[in-house]
Image (cartoon, rainbow, N blue to C red; front, side, top):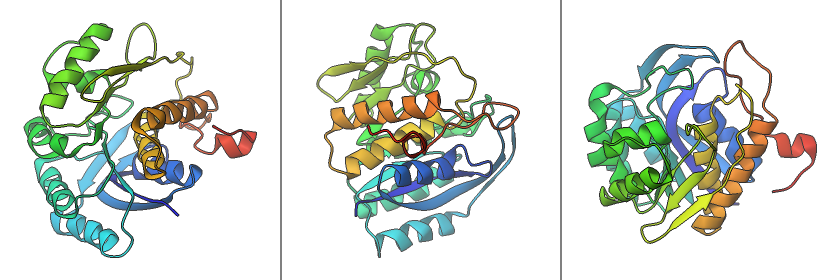
Length: 265
């Protein structure tokens, strides 16, 4: 059985973070493991508080996984501080895992910050060079590339700039675009556009976490990069189309819609 590790923050309401990653990986047939970097008290409406796990325990969790059940892919999500980033980067450089998918999480769906303002330099220096695939949304890509993104050409320019920082491939997610939900993949050589239909729902809590963990899962299952992106986008679209009416804010997607609806990707 293929295995995947998520290194990220937890979401006690279950729609995003480690919880979304474990659900996604399990739904896609991959054995899911976790290393929790931060404990986030949040729900569909707000982030109440964040407590980072100590650097030593972050490293110990990663050691515990790699010394026993070596993952076929690693998804890295929320890293709130430079200290967290340096600890994770040290272990990724030590173990050199295959298929490292990094979601540079900066904000919760409700706009609450999940990364400290002084962390962007550490993200660029420590984390981005480790990425086999980086998955920023438009606001995150703007912050990393230090530019405005208003159209597809801007997405291409940002992807090129981010690859110059060391990422092997970049998927700029178009969900924050004003027109459509097209995503742009730059694999270091060529661009591929993945068209998407905008779904009229507020229940999109955890979609970025879900997409990146789906990508890690398909890469762990030995699908090529472009096919992994296509399948992951199809999976996330289905999860959003079947989003759950739970909570008072941005509700969660349905990670197990394939089983409830008896469909295959």
